[in-house]
Length: 469
Picture 1 (cartoon, rainbow, N blue to C red):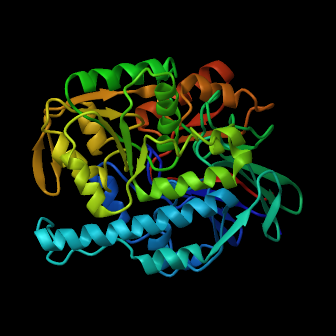
Picture 2 (picture 1 turned 45 degrees about the horizontal axis):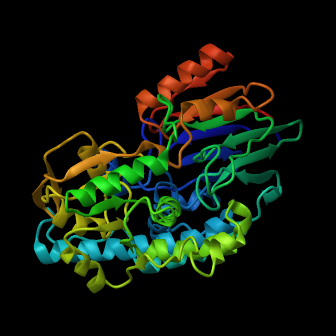
């Protein structure tokens, strides 16, 4: 019987969050990624809406990488009745255990705090999902190795290659085999940077019939020029002002990259011999995985296990585990670096640090990655003078600075370089996972320069990819 293949965009269409693409292949339905919406309130409210598809009619979920905007809706889907297999790479499986359990804990804590303080509009605020739902979701995971074609149904195979974005992040290719022909559909996930000091360069599939292309930085270049020099200046200026440097950073990838650079600056004596507080239990757990998955990065054994200055355990690093120790950092008035999650300041321990430090003119808040529209990080980047935290408007009097080159996303030039390695142009390229302006800019560039068929989809749009293969 011939197979018709369709796609429906359930997220990351015109926005960088909520990645979800429903791939319908005859009578077998695959959800590619299962991410939370973040940022703008209109997007975040979609997390609470009824899912637009009966979750029990989804036969499998296939994940590109572990970040919440690609995995965070999975416990909610399980809560609503999904019980099928979840495929991902081996490192992603380990990261999802850390990330989803942490997300569930935060959901429960924030709901409890809102009930206690009464700042929610709901009389009895509830979490989006609970720990039991995250644990049930984790029980569905079936890890798949990189670069090995793996069947998930009688006529459907998947294959992963290293995307170089975070540990385990992969570009996914789905092969659909019909009675007459086979078709290849590629989902980039999030593509990392070339020449990253820690992670491997992103890999590419030589050919594909349909491409779903991320476009986070589709409208601009983001040179990673002299990161050490810029960090050196920001640290020293902050300390000269008598303050502390506060960095919201993703626990997976960005925090480890910052530790790598700060270690180099300390060993070169370019910054003072100060404490660096890593206030993210999740980041602590993630760091251990760099030893387990040594083939996914460039760090050598002597970097990880140096007896005097191991990259993630050198003497200046102070891992903060308990809430009490986290709150005690607020008593430090100067000469400290504080790294805490989340990277876009949407939740987590970073919020109480921001609550206490944004009003201090001597302190510096350093943004080190993409800030999605509508997040606190985006509002700070735009120069807003007050930010609501815990239901209270907090004055922003500290220095707010941005360091673009640390992003884990390929910029426009690198995205084009990645696409240029595909031997023949795809039948269609959909530009996703980018704000509309960014996605359209990349689509226009690729259409004009390469002659590809390009399209920027809308949320909930549906397309027939193949008829009767």
